[in-house]
Length: 317
Image (cartoon, rainbow, N blue to C red):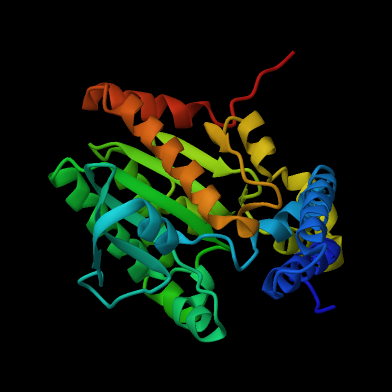
């Protein structure tokens, strides 16, 4: 049995391979019955495995390479995609994609992280870790969306902003901070969806919205569990403890008021059925847009301000 990308999924991967092998065989006695039996067992075992995942195990699911990325959502949900490149100051950053499209009859602006899947593409996309020029390219699109009254759809999936020397020299922190300022007052509807990892300021740089949604097995945190463990315990083997302390899963962030809704994923998570996941996300975004478009821009901005002011509010007993 080949090693699974997620250790606890190894038995499920074995069942999927057995089903694929049987489906490739010619029709024969008992073949259909055995396929049906294996599919029933796969569904039952998948639900059992996923019903008891720890926060660290959910982090591994959020990082799965086969989860849909921004361009997958664009391909399956949108039409007339025109991608924009460059920040008009330094260059282009493939870790963030930005462009215009049509979504369910509406013209929209789209920005999101793109991790890549093959080794070559991951290197090209820098594993979804954006540099300053990526955030400035995103800001170009945001201002265009505001100018032409286009709703802005943001898809977040990054371990964090790139911490390299060149990125810091070109103003990484300033670029993210500028996006936060501009998004806070952007005079158009903004819907954010956390589709995988929502890591630190790298995520937040395109994640200040009127509605913030998160997929069921995505995570959203100020730091990765490994980074937190290295700082607090000086031991990355404590990453599971760190994941629990960070409360970074979708149910955690919803309970804390950081996100507005959790989008359910199919049995076995998004990587097991990307198409169904994409349709769930599309339906949720469409419903959110319908709500936001009923608000005047001034009321929209006030509600956005109030939404973020409530996060982290403390009470004393």
